[in-house]
Length: 265
Ligand code: BTN
Image 1: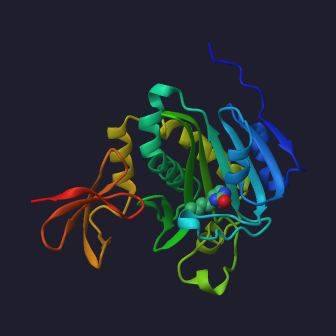
Image 2: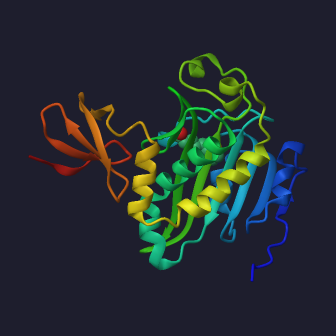
């Protein structure tokens, strides 16, 4: 018998029309919508939200990317969403190390379904269309001792931005710029959440092979820090990237850009 799942709850400010598809989303998420907020990640971390709550903001005043970079968050066009998960103890460790991989794969698969664009996940936590970045993920965890109390997976996706500020123009893109089509943010969020619920339950092996099959990072030349470079060969179970340096040595690079294991010969 299929479980009855009621229509999704959306709390908060008045929801714009292109997010209405979320009301019909029959997967167990609760949404909290804000017209304007500092950062959905900060709000998600500050509240005691239940598992599978998604905080969505139309615009963010202080949207953050990795390394505390600003995340461009104009009103009315893009997706700014933070998913709250309360992992059970057993899955917490496995989930944590590959959660960015699962989210990037989920976003890429969702966009591959919705569009006919050349979408791919770029290590460690970006989503690219062709040669430009369309989305990124900022995952944060709330920990008490050895326990992961909450995971917050922050997703930024450029959906309907038509023109980026000059400093971003060469490197950022959106679904609208690439396809000429104005997508409903609610439809894209629905696809992402469905994919995310699937991908995050994949075994590490399955997740890594699905990500690797879609990512152009594998077998491409990447910087490896300290002026070195090499060919990315594989993704490890801890989310680090195996790089074969020009010297022939292999190293593992973690997502912060640090070498995580000694060079092997
Ligand atoms: C990156 O590419 O560096 C990660 C970008 C993550 C941006 C999203 S937008 C929603 C959530 N709230 C934030 O402040 N950041 C993330």
